[in-house]
Length: 375
Image 1 (cartoon, rainbow, N blue to C red):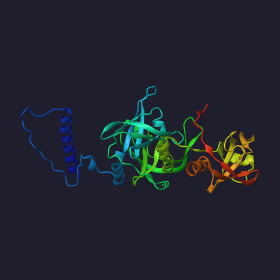
Image 2 (image 1 turned 60 degrees about the horizontal axis):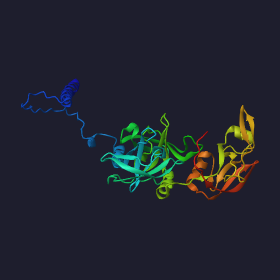
Image 3 (image 1 turned 135 degrees about the vertical axis):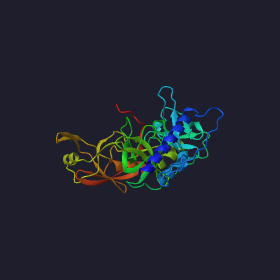
Image 4 (image 1 turned 60 degrees about the vertical axis):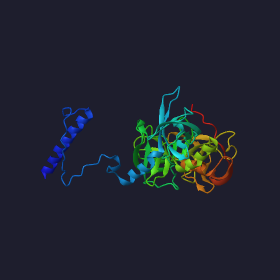
């Protein structure tokens, strides 16, 4: 049993010596001398790995997904005049249009795009939307092999295998795998009161440079656009449903209008239930109604605070429990309804709990205002 292992060890040692000499540019023979041809026979149970990358042994499904999609994924570089150079990832949505994150190209109108087979290409931003963190860029002279990726028809369940293709730390065409570890997450927009609805949570490794890249299923369709990696194996992507709503408008108009209620929201918590003596244990609490906003005069916000277990708790606000035919148990559900089912100007039915009774009011939605940084 020991002799085959000893034979392989000697063989690999000899091969390693030969390789080291070749890398160093050295020759073990005098000029003009021929090198004797040598051959080795491997033990029957040993199969040396091929050095051809296409033949390396790997997980078949993931490998095929990578090969099918990698040419449609590009690195993005931003060389701004007043900000440090930065970058991320983009992928082909249709024709010469690539999708990426808004925050990847926020400091430029003309990013550069790297395709592995042809190098850098000039691009231009044709549309951007800070509230979904999506942007579309148009690339000049895109390679023919970089074909459009398809969005999933329906969202996949938690536990579904997914992979992220991107350029973390400038390592182009990198591939990480994981599963969908959560759905319907609100992704907080930095320096803003707003969040991105319907987010996809994953445990696939996501690092700086992955932003804007596709999160794909094993059938090769895009489940979401990578937005952020939160550490501790929790990362987020903007859902395919959000992409399907926003990106065509960015291509057509350069912008996208989001529905807006003009309220401050909180999830119903045990303290809120106790302070407001609510007959229900779920819903979305209206903490504030902005003066002059769409909900002014339609919904009621909190009127005062009451101390419950050492904390001041809002009292007197409506609790939203239904919007049209959607039950609203929490803020994530309310945000998803507004983002995926409505447009500015739509009038929707809102069922609320008010003064221990249920009421239905009609609310006409507005357009979300331009983002204002948090003070």
